[in-house]
Length: 481
Image: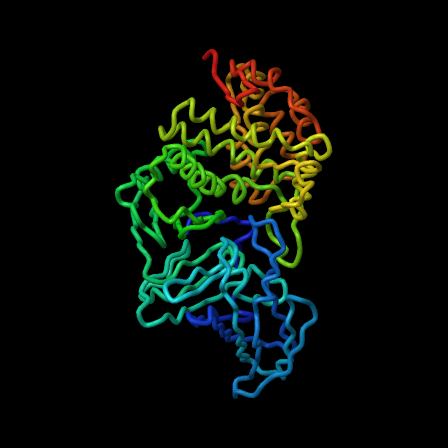
């Protein structure tokens, strides 16, 4: 496997204990039957389950879907256990070196951070299925799927054991939690592109072959790669689920719900879908490798707060438009239409006078999918406002550096300095120092837009690039090169 997130996916010494999981499916009851075989020298075995999934900034309380927990020793004798918190199970091993733990997970939620199983397919979100010991998420494990007799296919960014396509040796729980599985008899296609292997795993493939999506995805990958000049994975799995909403990024995969078909009669919807895929793909850079220092190693017990989520999400929204344009998948006018759409969605948020982008990065844990009646009055949405800051940062870096550098240079600097060389994320001050370094001058005026609840002066920041915003129609146009 290529370079992994060295600060996150570093395997511990495997000789102190072993954990092997086997998972079977109750397709009628929507349950995953889980068995853990633990081998180690413990009088007290602490097992934890995450309560959230990185990239999905909401406490999901996965343990509430767990039932029928049981533990036994090597001879099959039941062991005493109790809970000490909502996600911590404590087993008195009675000095048994081998402990067998079993439990069931109710899997019937249709979102990208939750598992579901039915008669046709299973989508496994590992955070809500697999337990780890103490806080040791860097430890390796192995797992095997026991599938229904008529199910033939498992798709994941993880590679199955050679000779056994249903078994996996995983370097760490952190990597497992970042690697969803699609299991059943879904459509698959594996391609090679620029020296790397890509698998399409598609739950509802209607129109896929005729759509041109494979070619479009190749172009998305090439355009994104050209920005960073490096590909951190060996292989990548594109899990495209059926009709639904939402997507979630992973280091060497993404899982996204779709419209259920690839027959887009409306070009604008086709462009929106490609932008969605480009967004999740670019997150392998801007979140997984180019990341605030708080985003790994993770504490799966509680919220992980960062003042820079506006950058991780909002600037990725900006780059989805750039990637499609550079890939030749949209026109310049369509690129500006996407950007101006974000501005139009931001405009009704009077919360911009009450909450900064920086504070929104903290409060996303309170406001993720906030549909309260006053949400727009008191909050900002960094998915809507963030792309505008991305455009402004790009224009200002180019202006201050006499067009010698752009936002691309900042992304490459952060990737190489902190991910490749230091093997970690960056602090907030390191981030802004890097912004100034690339611009060759102070970008305090842009930071002010992030740190304070303010109205954006579009004319001031867009005019140096010859871009004009019609605020009646919310349309951006380029008036000069």
